[in-house]
Amino acid sequence: MSFYDISETDYDTIVGDRQLTLTTSPGSEQLSLRQISSSHKDLDGKIAGNDATGQHKDWNNGALVGWGAQGSFSPDGLVKEWFDMLADNAVAIAASTDNRVDPAGNPIEAVYLTESGLDLKQLVQKFLLGAVAYSQGTDDYLDDDIDGKGLLTANTLAEGKSYTSLERTYDEGFGYFGAARNYLAYTDDEIAAKGGREAYASGYNDANGDGAIDLTAEYNFGNSVNAAKRDRGTAANTNPTDFTSKAFNAFLAGRQIIADANQQPLTDEQLADLQAQRDIAVEYWEKSIASTIVHYINDVSADLAQLGTEGFSFADMAKHWSEMKGFALGLQFNPHSPLTDADFANLHGFLGDAPELDVDAVDGYLSDLQLARDLLQDRYGFDAENVANW
Image 1 (cartoon, rainbow, N blue to C red):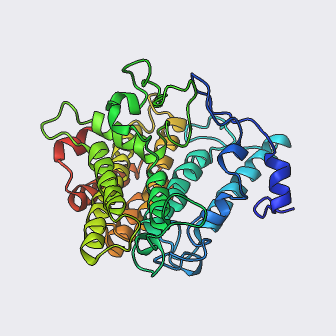
Image 2 (image 1 turned 180 degrees about the vertical axis):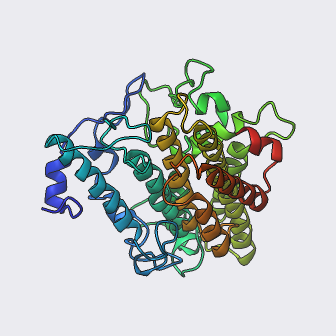
Protein backbone atom coordinates (compact mmCIF):
# COMPACT_ATOMS: atom_id res chain seq x y z
CA MET A 1 0.00 0.00 0.00
CA SER A 2 1.40 3.39 -0.98
CA PHE A 3 1.63 5.92 1.82
CA TYR A 4 0.10 8.47 -0.54
CA ASP A 5 -2.72 6.33 -1.96
CA ILE A 6 -5.02 5.11 0.82
CA SER A 7 -8.22 3.30 -0.11
CA GLU A 8 -11.50 3.58 1.77
CA THR A 9 -10.83 0.24 3.50
CA ASP A 10 -7.28 1.22 4.41
CA TYR A 11 -8.54 4.56 5.69
CA ASP A 12 -11.00 2.84 8.02
CA THR A 13 -8.25 0.54 9.25
CA ILE A 14 -5.82 3.39 9.88
CA VAL A 15 -8.29 5.90 11.33
CA GLY A 16 -10.78 3.68 13.13
CA ASP A 17 -11.68 5.35 16.42
CA ARG A 18 -8.19 6.72 16.99
CA GLN A 19 -8.29 9.49 19.56
CA LEU A 20 -7.47 13.06 18.57
CA THR A 21 -4.28 14.47 20.05
CA LEU A 22 -5.86 17.93 20.25
CA THR A 23 -7.15 18.50 23.78
CA THR A 24 -9.40 21.21 25.20
CA SER A 25 -10.82 22.15 28.57
CA PRO A 26 -13.69 21.36 28.78
CA GLY A 27 -13.10 18.35 26.55
CA SER A 28 -13.93 18.37 22.86
CA GLU A 29 -17.22 17.08 21.49
CA GLN A 30 -15.35 15.14 18.82
CA LEU A 31 -12.91 12.56 20.17
CA SER A 32 -11.65 10.96 16.95
CA LEU A 33 -10.93 11.88 13.35
CA ARG A 34 -13.87 9.74 12.24
CA GLN A 35 -16.24 12.03 14.21
CA ILE A 36 -14.93 15.02 12.27
CA SER A 37 -14.75 13.37 8.84
CA SER A 38 -17.36 10.66 8.47
CA SER A 39 -16.42 9.92 4.87
CA HIS A 40 -13.10 9.03 3.28
CA LYS A 41 -11.28 12.35 2.81
CA ASP A 42 -7.57 12.98 2.76
CA LEU A 43 -5.20 15.85 2.14
CA ASP A 44 -3.95 14.26 -1.06
CA GLY A 45 -7.41 14.54 -2.61
CA LYS A 46 -7.88 18.14 -1.47
CA ILE A 47 -4.50 19.59 -2.41
CA ALA A 48 -4.42 22.03 -5.32
CA GLY A 49 -4.20 20.17 -8.60
CA ASN A 50 -5.72 16.94 -7.32
CA ASP A 51 -9.24 18.32 -6.90
CA ALA A 52 -11.23 17.45 -10.01
CA THR A 53 -12.55 20.94 -10.83
CA GLY A 54 -12.33 24.53 -9.77
CA GLN A 55 -8.63 25.30 -10.06
CA HIS A 56 -7.71 28.55 -11.82
CA LYS A 57 -4.37 27.07 -12.95
CA ASP A 58 -3.21 23.60 -13.96
CA TRP A 59 -1.06 22.97 -10.90
CA ASN A 60 -0.10 19.43 -11.91
CA ASN A 61 1.19 20.47 -15.32
CA GLY A 62 3.71 23.25 -14.89
CA ALA A 63 1.84 26.05 -13.11
CA LEU A 64 3.42 25.85 -9.65
CA VAL A 65 5.95 28.62 -8.98
CA GLY A 66 8.27 29.14 -6.05
CA TRP A 67 10.32 25.95 -5.65
CA GLY A 68 12.97 25.32 -8.26
CA ALA A 69 12.17 26.24 -11.84
CA GLN A 70 8.49 26.81 -12.61
CA GLY A 71 6.73 23.49 -13.02
CA SER A 72 9.48 21.46 -11.34
CA PHE A 73 6.88 20.15 -8.93
CA SER A 74 3.14 19.86 -8.56
CA PRO A 75 1.79 20.82 -5.12
CA ASP A 76 1.35 17.13 -4.30
CA GLY A 77 4.78 16.32 -5.67
CA LEU A 78 6.42 19.04 -3.59
CA VAL A 79 4.95 17.68 -0.36
CA LYS A 80 6.16 14.19 -1.32
CA GLU A 81 9.63 15.61 -2.04
CA TRP A 82 9.79 17.01 1.49
CA PHE A 83 8.54 13.74 2.98
CA ASP A 84 11.21 11.88 1.04
CA MET A 85 13.85 14.22 2.46
CA LEU A 86 12.47 13.57 5.94
CA ALA A 87 12.54 9.82 5.32
CA ASP A 88 16.17 9.97 4.18
CA ASN A 89 17.12 11.75 7.39
CA ALA A 90 15.24 9.21 9.50
CA VAL A 91 16.93 6.28 7.74
CA ALA A 92 20.37 7.85 8.21
CA ILE A 93 19.71 8.44 11.90
CA ALA A 94 18.48 4.87 12.41
CA ALA A 95 21.53 3.49 10.62
CA SER A 96 23.91 5.79 12.54
CA THR A 97 25.13 7.25 9.24
CA ASP A 98 23.70 10.74 9.79
CA ASN A 99 26.47 13.29 9.16
CA ARG A 100 24.39 16.48 9.03
CA VAL A 101 26.00 19.52 10.65
CA ASP A 102 24.97 23.17 10.98
CA PRO A 103 27.15 26.10 9.79
CA ALA A 104 29.13 25.99 13.05
CA GLY A 105 29.90 22.30 12.60
CA ASN A 106 27.49 21.14 15.29
CA PRO A 107 25.53 17.92 14.65
CA ILE A 108 21.93 18.44 13.56
CA GLU A 109 19.85 16.15 15.75
CA ALA A 110 16.28 16.99 14.70
CA VAL A 111 15.12 14.66 11.93
CA TYR A 112 13.09 17.42 10.26
CA LEU A 113 16.05 19.82 9.80
CA THR A 114 18.31 19.80 6.75
CA GLU A 115 21.86 21.07 6.37
CA SER A 116 20.60 23.67 3.91
CA GLY A 117 18.48 25.28 6.66
CA LEU A 118 15.05 23.81 5.94
CA ASP A 119 12.63 22.85 8.68
CA LEU A 120 10.57 20.22 6.86
CA LYS A 121 7.91 20.13 9.55
CA GLN A 122 7.17 23.83 9.12
CA LEU A 123 7.41 23.74 5.33
CA VAL A 124 4.84 20.96 5.05
CA GLN A 125 2.42 22.45 7.56
CA LYS A 126 2.48 26.00 6.23
CA PHE A 127 2.43 24.96 2.58
CA LEU A 128 -0.62 22.77 3.17
CA LEU A 129 -2.42 25.74 4.76
CA GLY A 130 -2.10 27.33 1.34
CA ALA A 131 -2.31 24.38 -1.05
CA VAL A 132 -5.29 22.83 0.77
CA ALA A 133 -7.11 25.33 3.02
CA TYR A 134 -6.49 28.53 1.06
CA SER A 135 -6.88 26.87 -2.32
CA GLN A 136 -10.10 25.11 -1.34
CA GLY A 137 -11.51 28.25 0.27
CA THR A 138 -10.68 30.84 -2.38
CA ASP A 139 -10.36 28.85 -5.59
CA ASP A 140 -13.12 26.33 -5.04
CA TYR A 141 -15.91 27.26 -2.64
CA LEU A 142 -15.71 31.06 -2.93
CA ASP A 143 -14.79 31.52 -6.58
CA ASP A 144 -17.27 32.33 -9.36
CA ASP A 145 -15.69 31.14 -12.59
CA ILE A 146 -17.61 27.88 -13.16
CA ASP A 147 -21.39 27.56 -13.54
CA GLY A 148 -22.87 25.48 -10.74
CA LYS A 149 -19.77 25.79 -8.54
CA GLY A 150 -18.63 28.19 -5.81
CA LEU A 151 -20.76 31.32 -5.62
CA LEU A 152 -22.59 30.14 -8.76
CA THR A 153 -23.95 27.06 -6.96
CA ALA A 154 -27.74 26.75 -7.05
CA ASN A 155 -29.46 28.40 -4.09
CA THR A 156 -31.98 25.57 -3.79
CA LEU A 157 -32.49 23.07 -0.99
CA ALA A 158 -29.93 20.30 -0.95
CA GLU A 159 -31.55 16.88 -1.06
CA GLY A 160 -32.76 15.87 2.39
CA LYS A 161 -31.29 19.00 3.98
CA SER A 162 -32.66 22.17 5.53
CA TYR A 163 -30.09 24.37 3.79
CA THR A 164 -29.40 25.22 0.18
CA SER A 165 -26.48 24.01 -1.89
CA LEU A 166 -25.15 27.58 -2.06
CA GLU A 167 -25.38 27.97 1.72
CA ARG A 168 -23.40 24.76 2.17
CA THR A 169 -20.79 25.83 -0.38
CA TYR A 170 -20.36 29.27 1.18
CA ASP A 171 -20.14 27.81 4.68
CA GLU A 172 -17.39 25.41 3.54
CA GLY A 173 -15.44 28.34 2.12
CA PHE A 174 -15.77 30.15 5.44
CA GLY A 175 -14.73 26.99 7.27
CA TYR A 176 -11.34 27.01 5.59
CA PHE A 177 -10.68 30.44 7.11
CA GLY A 178 -10.86 28.58 10.41
CA ALA A 179 -12.81 30.98 12.64
CA ALA A 180 -15.16 29.94 15.43
CA ARG A 181 -18.75 31.02 14.93
CA ASN A 182 -18.49 33.56 17.75
CA TYR A 183 -15.13 34.87 16.49
CA LEU A 184 -16.06 38.49 17.18
CA ALA A 185 -16.65 37.70 20.85
CA TYR A 186 -12.92 37.07 21.30
CA THR A 187 -10.17 39.63 21.76
CA ASP A 188 -7.10 39.31 19.56
CA ASP A 189 -5.12 38.05 22.56
CA GLU A 190 -7.70 35.33 23.13
CA ILE A 191 -7.77 34.14 19.52
CA ALA A 192 -3.98 34.05 19.53
CA ALA A 193 -4.03 32.18 22.87
CA LYS A 194 -1.89 34.87 24.45
CA GLY A 195 -4.14 35.68 27.38
CA GLY A 196 -7.52 37.17 28.23
CA ARG A 197 -10.65 35.76 29.85
CA GLU A 198 -10.31 32.22 31.13
CA ALA A 199 -13.18 30.90 29.00
CA TYR A 200 -11.63 32.27 25.78
CA ALA A 201 -7.90 32.50 26.48
CA SER A 202 -6.87 29.27 24.76
CA GLY A 203 -8.41 30.19 21.41
CA TYR A 204 -11.63 28.28 21.93
CA ASN A 205 -14.86 28.83 23.85
CA ASP A 206 -17.89 26.76 24.85
CA ALA A 207 -20.31 29.21 23.24
CA ASN A 208 -23.44 27.11 23.72
CA GLY A 209 -22.57 26.09 27.28
CA ASP A 210 -23.02 22.36 26.73
CA GLY A 211 -19.81 21.47 28.56
CA ALA A 212 -17.86 20.48 25.43
CA ILE A 213 -15.91 22.24 22.69
CA ASP A 214 -17.34 21.61 19.22
CA LEU A 215 -14.27 21.58 16.99
CA THR A 216 -16.43 22.47 13.98
CA ALA A 217 -17.83 25.65 15.55
CA GLU A 218 -16.12 26.63 18.80
CA TYR A 219 -12.40 26.52 17.98
CA ASN A 220 -10.18 28.94 16.04
CA PHE A 221 -7.81 27.33 13.55
CA GLY A 222 -5.27 28.33 10.91
CA ASN A 223 -5.31 31.74 9.29
CA SER A 224 -8.08 33.04 11.54
CA VAL A 225 -5.50 32.81 14.34
CA ASN A 226 -2.75 34.44 12.27
CA ALA A 227 -5.09 37.36 11.54
CA ALA A 228 -5.38 38.00 15.28
CA LYS A 229 -1.64 37.61 15.82
CA ARG A 230 -0.89 40.28 13.26
CA ASP A 231 -3.62 42.59 14.61
CA ARG A 232 -2.27 42.34 18.15
CA GLY A 233 1.20 43.10 16.77
CA THR A 234 0.01 46.51 15.57
CA ALA A 235 -2.28 47.41 18.47
CA ALA A 236 0.09 50.06 19.85
CA ASN A 237 1.00 51.49 16.43
CA THR A 238 -0.32 54.62 14.74
CA ASN A 239 -2.41 52.68 12.19
CA PRO A 240 -3.36 49.34 13.77
CA THR A 241 -4.83 46.65 11.56
CA ASP A 242 -8.15 44.87 12.07
CA PHE A 243 -7.91 41.85 9.80
CA THR A 244 -10.05 39.74 12.13
CA SER A 245 -13.28 41.73 12.11
CA LYS A 246 -12.88 42.93 8.51
CA ALA A 247 -12.74 39.36 7.21
CA PHE A 248 -15.36 37.95 9.57
CA ASN A 249 -17.90 40.74 9.07
CA ALA A 250 -17.61 40.32 5.31
CA PHE A 251 -18.22 36.59 5.65
CA LEU A 252 -21.29 37.35 7.77
CA ALA A 253 -22.61 39.93 5.32
CA GLY A 254 -22.22 37.52 2.42
CA ARG A 255 -24.02 34.77 4.31
CA GLN A 256 -26.89 37.15 5.06
CA ILE A 257 -27.26 37.98 1.37
CA ILE A 258 -27.72 34.28 0.63
CA ALA A 259 -30.19 33.82 3.51
CA ASP A 260 -32.22 36.86 2.42
CA ALA A 261 -32.74 35.24 -1.00
CA ASN A 262 -35.08 32.77 0.77
CA GLN A 263 -33.88 29.68 -1.09
CA GLN A 264 -34.45 31.34 -4.45
CA PRO A 265 -31.90 31.99 -7.21
CA LEU A 266 -29.86 35.11 -6.52
CA THR A 267 -30.66 38.14 -8.63
CA ASP A 268 -27.84 39.80 -10.53
CA GLU A 269 -27.76 42.50 -7.86
CA GLN A 270 -27.61 39.96 -5.02
CA LEU A 271 -24.82 38.04 -6.74
CA ALA A 272 -22.86 41.26 -7.27
CA ASP A 273 -23.29 42.13 -3.58
CA LEU A 274 -22.20 38.61 -2.59
CA GLN A 275 -19.12 38.84 -4.79
CA ALA A 276 -18.25 42.20 -3.21
CA GLN A 277 -18.39 40.72 0.29
CA ARG A 278 -16.38 37.71 -0.87
CA ASP A 279 -13.74 40.09 -2.18
CA ILE A 280 -13.49 41.84 1.18
CA ALA A 281 -13.31 38.58 3.15
CA VAL A 282 -10.62 37.13 0.89
CA GLU A 283 -8.70 40.43 0.85
CA TYR A 284 -8.27 40.42 4.61
CA TRP A 285 -7.73 36.66 4.70
CA GLU A 286 -4.84 37.16 2.29
CA LYS A 287 -3.54 40.17 4.21
CA SER A 288 -3.35 37.97 7.31
CA ILE A 289 -1.11 35.59 5.32
CA ALA A 290 0.98 38.30 3.65
CA SER A 291 1.58 40.09 6.94
CA THR A 292 2.63 36.78 8.50
CA ILE A 293 5.22 36.41 5.73
CA VAL A 294 6.44 39.91 6.63
CA HIS A 295 6.64 38.82 10.28
CA TYR A 296 8.88 35.90 9.38
CA ILE A 297 10.99 37.98 7.00
CA ASN A 298 11.72 40.16 10.02
CA ASP A 299 12.52 37.11 12.15
CA VAL A 300 14.80 35.53 9.52
CA SER A 301 16.59 38.83 8.99
CA ALA A 302 17.26 39.12 12.71
CA ASP A 303 18.41 35.49 12.86
CA LEU A 304 20.80 35.75 9.91
CA ALA A 305 22.26 39.00 11.21
CA GLN A 306 23.79 36.76 13.91
CA LEU A 307 25.26 34.23 11.45
CA GLY A 308 28.84 33.39 12.40
CA THR A 309 28.40 34.52 16.01
CA GLU A 310 27.58 32.65 19.20
CA GLY A 311 24.13 34.28 19.15
CA PHE A 312 23.09 32.45 15.97
CA SER A 313 20.52 29.67 16.40
CA PHE A 314 20.38 27.36 13.39
CA ALA A 315 17.15 25.68 14.54
CA ASP A 316 15.36 28.99 15.13
CA MET A 317 16.49 30.37 11.79
CA ALA A 318 15.39 27.22 9.92
CA LYS A 319 12.00 27.30 11.61
CA HIS A 320 11.42 30.97 10.82
CA TRP A 321 12.67 30.65 7.23
CA SER A 322 10.48 27.63 6.54
CA GLU A 323 7.39 29.29 7.97
CA MET A 324 8.11 32.34 5.80
CA LYS A 325 8.59 30.24 2.66
CA GLY A 326 5.68 27.88 3.33
CA PHE A 327 3.21 30.71 3.80
CA ALA A 328 4.60 32.58 0.78
CA LEU A 329 4.11 29.59 -1.51
CA GLY A 330 0.41 29.56 -0.63
CA LEU A 331 -0.40 33.00 -2.03
CA GLN A 332 -0.49 31.70 -5.60
CA PHE A 333 -3.60 29.60 -4.91
CA ASN A 334 -5.93 32.61 -4.57
CA PRO A 335 -7.35 33.59 -7.99
CA HIS A 336 -8.19 37.03 -6.55
CA SER A 337 -4.73 37.82 -5.17
CA PRO A 338 -3.41 41.38 -5.65
CA LEU A 339 -0.04 39.83 -6.56
CA THR A 340 0.47 39.44 -10.28
CA ASP A 341 2.26 36.37 -11.61
CA ALA A 342 5.35 38.55 -12.09
CA ASP A 343 5.09 39.83 -8.50
CA PHE A 344 4.86 36.29 -7.18
CA ALA A 345 7.86 35.11 -9.19
CA ASN A 346 9.87 38.12 -8.00
CA LEU A 347 8.88 37.47 -4.39
CA HIS A 348 10.22 33.92 -4.52
CA GLY A 349 13.28 35.04 -6.41
CA PHE A 350 14.09 37.18 -3.38
CA LEU A 351 13.23 34.47 -0.82
CA GLY A 352 15.01 31.64 -2.64
CA ASP A 353 14.66 27.92 -1.94
CA ALA A 354 16.89 27.96 1.15
CA PRO A 355 18.44 30.57 3.43
CA GLU A 356 21.93 31.88 2.73
CA LEU A 357 24.33 30.24 5.22
CA ASP A 358 27.60 31.65 3.88
CA VAL A 359 28.64 34.43 6.23
CA ASP A 360 30.45 36.17 3.35
CA ALA A 361 27.31 36.23 1.18
CA VAL A 362 24.58 36.72 3.75
CA ASP A 363 24.42 40.51 3.41
CA GLY A 364 23.23 40.19 -0.18
CA TYR A 365 20.51 37.78 0.89
CA LEU A 366 19.44 40.11 3.69
CA SER A 367 19.05 42.83 1.06
CA ASP A 368 16.87 40.47 -1.00
CA LEU A 369 14.68 39.81 2.03
CA GLN A 370 14.14 43.53 2.42
CA LEU A 371 13.15 43.76 -1.25
CA ALA A 372 10.63 40.97 -0.64
CA ARG A 373 9.26 42.88 2.34
CA ASP A 374 9.04 46.09 0.31
CA LEU A 375 7.13 44.28 -2.43
CA LEU A 376 4.57 42.95 0.05
CA GLN A 377 4.24 46.33 1.74
CA ASP A 378 3.51 47.99 -1.59
CA ARG A 379 1.10 45.43 -3.03
CA TYR A 380 -0.97 45.05 0.13
CA GLY A 381 -0.84 48.69 1.20
CA PHE A 382 0.68 47.87 4.56
CA ASP A 383 1.66 50.69 6.89
CA ALA A 384 5.44 51.09 7.13
CA GLU A 385 5.43 51.12 10.95
CA ASN A 386 3.43 47.90 11.05
CA VAL A 387 5.75 46.24 8.52
CA ALA A 388 8.84 47.20 10.50
CA ASN A 389 7.44 45.83 13.75
CA TRP A 390 5.51 42.71 12.79
